[in-house]
Structures are given as C-alpha cells and as structure tokens.
Image (tube, rainbow, N blue to C red; front, side):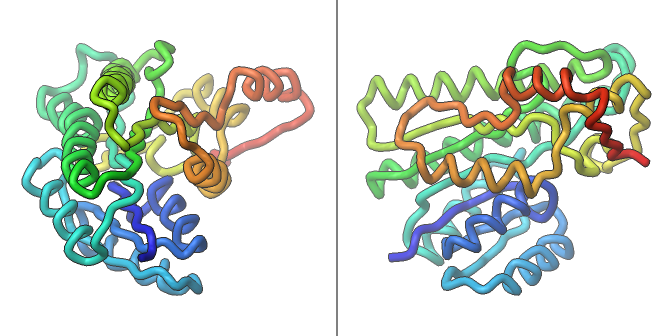
Length: 267
C-alpha cells in the first residue's frame, strides 16, 4: 500500500513545497487550508507533477478540533493509513510590540500556531496508535530556540510552546514504548509572504531595515528548505529528533561571508 502524508497549511509556502517533494516521491497526499479556492489551486498544480500517488484535500481550520478530526478521518477513509503528519499551518503577528496587539489577534495566533499543532498531533496520534506506526512533525519558528526579536514576542511565545509540547509528546511516546516517532522541523528564515503578513486576515506588515538585512543574510526560499527537510524526514528513525536547516554553523558562515555574498529578497 502506498504511503500517505498529511500536511496542514499546505496551499502555499513551506507546506506547499513539502507537498511537492512528497508528490515527487510518489506519496499519497492529504492537503488542508482554510480557503477552498486556494486549496483547489494547490491540488491542481500538484497534479501536474508526474507521480503514482493520489491527492485529496479538505478545508480545515486547525484551531477547530472537529475540523482536524475530520481531516484525519478523510485521510484514513481515502488511503487507509497515515505514515507522516506535518503540522505546518501558522499565522504571523503584526509587526508590533506585545502590548500593542489586539485581543482578537492574540487569540487567533495562539489558536492556529499552538492549538493547531496540538490538535493535529493528537488527531494523528489516535490514528497511528490504531495502525501501529507513523511519524508526526511540528514546524518550529522564531522563538523555538529561545531567541528574542522585538515585535515578534507573541509569535515566538507560541512557537516556543510548540517546541515544549513536541518534546513532551516525544517523551510520553518513549515512556509508553509506542511505535511512533515525533519530531521538530526547524526551517530557519523562509522568504515567503508570511514575513510581511499577519493574523487571520493576512494584513500587510512592514519590516524595518535591520530585520530585512538579517533576512537577506539568513533567509532562503521554501523550495530549497523543503527539499532538505523531506530528505531528512524520510531518513529519520529517531523519536524526538529536530531536523534543522539553518544550523548555528551555517548561520555563522552566512554572516562571515555576507560582505561579498550580497542578497536582496525585498527589492
């Protein structure tokens, strides 16, 4: 039976590029997004890639437990198994200090970035415990490594919590000796519209010049990052592993060579 991957937030950005990589490897795919038109567009684009795998999709708000449960049900009903589940869906915060952000935006960010990862992990766990195998990966972000950056405090708070939750879940799996692995995907700084949008309505966010300079040095496009992450996901057999694209060594080399290796993602 062909293997199946479920990816949340997969109509664009990293999620879509991850889907491309699994599609090229002939996996069945289950995509989800909150916008049906964008979801259909992503599915149609992926179908243009020659593959033996099949694709299905579902409109899903990851902050809604019943939506996520229905996504897991559809994956099992369509393909009979879930080999890999990736919790990628997320929203950014407005480029504001913590005390300036509205209550609605705070709730939406925590609902999607934190609760979405929890809902997805738990839904996947229940299916994988019944089938006796599977792997779950949660996508980290700025704040997961305890780094601080002004005007990203709430986003970093949610991502730091995702890291703790993932490590805790991996520990519980180890404690119960379950045949499932849980890991973290650390993509580093990705150059997508996610950087300049915020909240559930994707409001425009203007980055300052200092932030743009750092992103130009350390950033990469999601297709490059996705290629690396998927190769490592398929290679990994270790519970609790962090798969990291932008390592400390790589970041140090980028800064040391930035004087002559000029890049401008914002021109």
